[in-house]
Image (cartoon, helix red, strand yellow):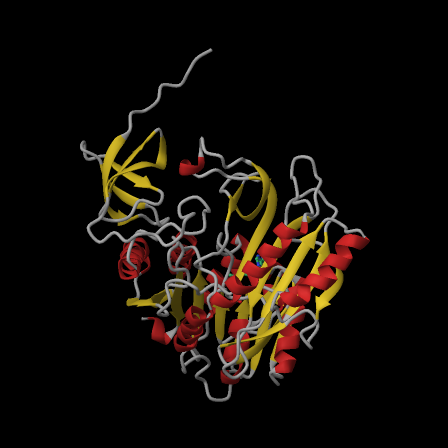
Length: 475
Ligand SMILES: C[S@@+](CC[C@H](N)C(=O)[O-])C[C@H]1O[C@@H](n2cnc3c(N)ncnc32)[C@H](O)[C@@H]1O
């Protein structure tokens, strides 16, 4: 048998973020490395597999102590060791380097104040195999047991036992603490993903907007294996004590480990069924357990304002032409509905049919009558839409589908002289934006402006809003 020779570990002094949000820096020979979770200003050990942080040689001068006991292992956060201002400055600098080929005026980084407690949704998993932290190895803490928390990255069968999450809102943590104490006390089995036995499987908590200064309402969706009478009686008795606005009990008999299932019973009613209300961009949303919604509302307010600003007042500036907005990849309609007052007609497209149902209901609830939503893939439905004066695209992480990109690129060449067309591209993965943006630019679109929004403090993720034009204002 041949063994692969292990590459020696190297000391790397980290001097910036790379395009994926990893720490990047040089070793003694000048070779550059990208290392996951390596803070700018620190010196780390890496080697073997490129990108793995093997150890910390010297902390950065401005290093801070991570507040989370499970930081680095739960997989949620990467930058708790860096002060928030430094995270944001480094994210912005990395974007400046990455997006340079697109051009456009850089409007910096928008960010809400909170660096913690901003998430309005968390999803946890029940399991029987604990992910042992370094200091828990060779102690009395056993791997086998009943654990509730986040999956260890890449480990479907190991749970990072998580009593609370510093990214989640205080209201979510409060309800979570009660549920956690109860399920441990219940004696019912947690799910074993190898043997496919157990009762408790997944737990989703989602926060809405408080009504006039009250506590934020929390929706709970609890996913279990189909339950017996004793389990049903226990849930009916305990759920009302958790302090949640509504609690849904879903049953999932399938082997695959995911927060999915059929609604068995609404254990606690909010008055609006199994949903809570949230407010964003001046629009009321009714959120069901599965509806897509921005997880950082104060940050998303800044995102919506940026989109509005970038659509501008010149969208459809020809006085007698109808102002038509396309909201592509619209989810539950957030961006289109928030901008609907500026347009004669809004057309939203989204592949998830349930999200389109939500978008239609949200339009009705908000008295918005000029928005039409269609379920399907953007790349298939795009050509059927009436000609736009403004377009929003907010695609998933892998960016625009090639066919959708082709249609949008072609629009640059048949644009009439009589009116401008504005495209606002919202990107959650900047490298996908770069790839699509280079093609848009080649086709004749001009990037005039961009701004970053720090929707996800403590993590590698960042959102970018870019404005594109063709026609007279594109020069
Ligand atoms: C980043 S989210 C945008 C959601 C929305 N704009 C918002 O801010 O709430 C991307 C959305 O694109 C949808 N999606 C993914 N692929 C799609 C496709 N090919 N056609 C239409 N929608 C798609 C996803 O379901 C998801 O809701």
